[in-house]
Length: 314
Ligand code: GLU
Image 1 (cartoon, helix red, strand yellow):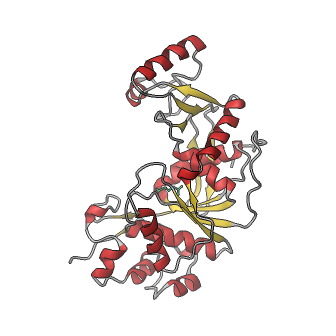
Image 2 (cartoon, helix red, strand yellow):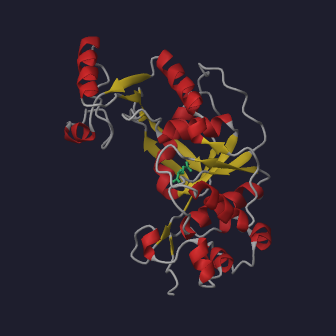
Image 3 (cartoon, rainbow, N blue to C red):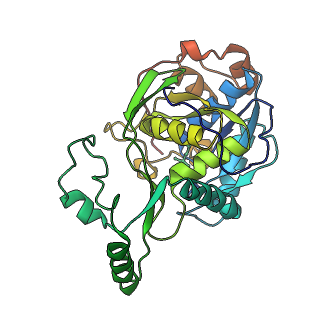
């Protein structure tokens, strides 16, 4: 990590010192086999490196009734033991607000009034990386801000809040992918609908619960430099990252519910051997269950290619 840690401006509870991994699904529906594989891998990485394993419900949006419970029940049925406490993001808005206020106090945030369309249409500033926020609202005067706030209010919108950054490039050492480098732009900390942004919630949750190993699918690898930068700013130790290959449908797109029988319940009904598939898809032989998986698992042997899953026909 190339960011110098800074002292936290806001005193936070001492993070627990027990090394811990986690799985943090969004409860938007039942887990499909790709999510299940990632959750099992997170558990295997944690347990085979002497870590406890925590569960977090990322329910700041897209919640389906009962999904959080079913997601956990599915993984527990495969032998994934969760160490308490289970964190629920919607119950932690005061923690996110406290960290946001501390960053604001340090002059590290600013309000942004841009719509997505305006951002896309804006010419990118010379020193910002391609695709980054062009900095339209970064240095506005107070009078312009007041007018912009009033304009949004009339439309029933709120300003978003962005992190003020130096647009530096940050590298994290991923235990699976190797170095992952990304430009850290002025990313959103609180969205225009008033909800805390994913990056801030994840960093605060991982930091305050002592998560020192983050295992998740590699579609989130590009978020790691921003999250590592933010963790360092907030005074948290940067966790070890392990981004594992996504599971794809035969079309090459990421696996989704519409691809057929992909949930544990659907696969069980068809007599599909989930454990055998998990073992093979990870580059081992067919596993008979969690016991064998724990005995054999070795991150160094995990196959690096994306895994293609063809749902069984019914
Ligand atoms: N909630 C996110 C998801 O379900 C994962 C966030 C994370 O692991 O950092 O995709």
